[in-house]
Image 1: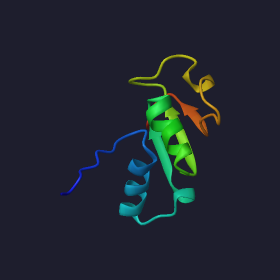
Image 2: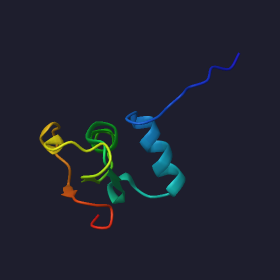
Image 3: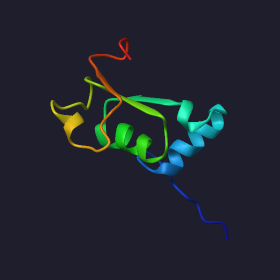
Image 4: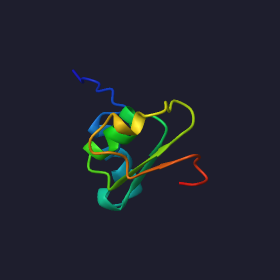
Length: 81
């Protein structure tokens, strides 16, 4: 039979599929998100070139200190990203 594989953030496979669909090199991609673990840490672990943490939604003060490497940038809103 066929086995289904469910993927989603922060799985590296999720980010690879997105990058492949966009047709860009991971090092030229940027992930912008409000979840330090699922968006930022996950994308950086998958080889995405930059990850910007937005201080809205799931963001909690100090999130940027919880991961290594740290986000490329931390901004107040997606408009600033």
